[in-house]
Image (cartoon, rainbow, N blue to C red; front, side, top):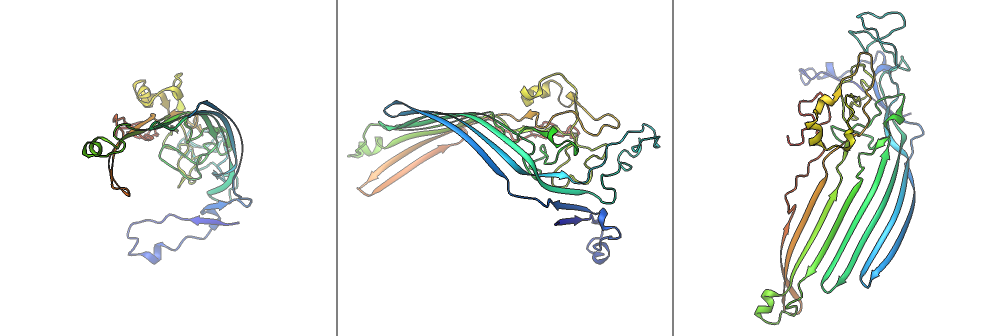
Length: 358
């Protein structure tokens, strides 16, 4: 049963008193934080079905329409292997009858499932995913110096965990509720409902032979372009704290997964980041009530802004003799200077909450 035990050491005079401070306290090693790999840990697997119809619209024009469904099973996930037990909350500074949490110590008195052991980060195969997509492609084969391709995908990607570790500050790898992992089933962090890509290459037809000086100057010109338009990445609104100690000790490398409560009737999942900020920003969420362990905000309910990128290139090919060709090219990236932001800060406790301009 492989595991890794960890203990935090103070940095004050750490190098001067190396021997004294690096000796772990093993009076009760069971209470050390440990990372455990499940005994039945195995490689994930997928099953897939697909259907595609092709139609030649003309001599050099092909249309493809397809559907694909992929299901991921036994995916990697980090979970709390020894969570704190839910228990009633006492609004006073002392525990009352049948309570274990107090006003002053909301988490200290909450026992774990196995009180003889400490924090256990369990690496397991508990996650799953489903991906459904409609794919449409239109391809123009090269003829008369012109070729092009346009590809559109409309998809839905749902999972219970997108990573085994914490990929960014607005994503978490562990379930918010250690007793209800399926409550985290939502849009995957890799979900992009709409994606349109395309490209074209066009070679100007004049002076192809480049026989004289005029031909070498005016012939061999070519333009090309690539473009991508796609939906933004989903991300989770986080509380930034853990008032009830629900995931205390397990958040290292996988993030604090506690989410706030939603304080609005707006459909936040259909709103852009600027619209959310104009509607109130962090005031659309509230902290947890006393004794509340987890928030009611769903996982990945917000989405970063979409990505729009157009590349354009100009190429000049000059033939020198029969075996040598000289090329000059200019490539322009993000031609229309679109702003493509990443995932913003998702913790409502942070001063730069949803700030993607920072």
